[in-house]
Length: 135
Image (cartoon, rainbow, N blue to C red; front, side, top):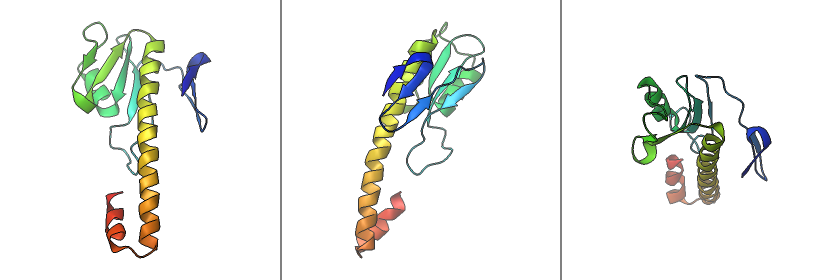
């Protein structure tokens, strides 16, 4: 993916437009494969106190609740719950794009594995049938 004019991310497969966000609003990226509303999808938020936050949705909301901005910290949290703070939209969109690319690549790998397991299950492999519960 690459960022082109006005915050538009483009990929060979899909185009994702990151809209201009009013203060206090956010935009979410892709969820984990097979999951819904887990709070871990990558998000970008325009903070009311100034700046931008990028990271997992629930961690970003938690950081906003604490009133954290780029003025107080550059990041908050550890591991997969880390939130980054930026002063400008351009750098925040760049980080958001990186997180979305990683999630899309991971989802494509899991989807391919799921389809292979599904084909084995249709062929009668009992181990594959039981493994389908993991998706």
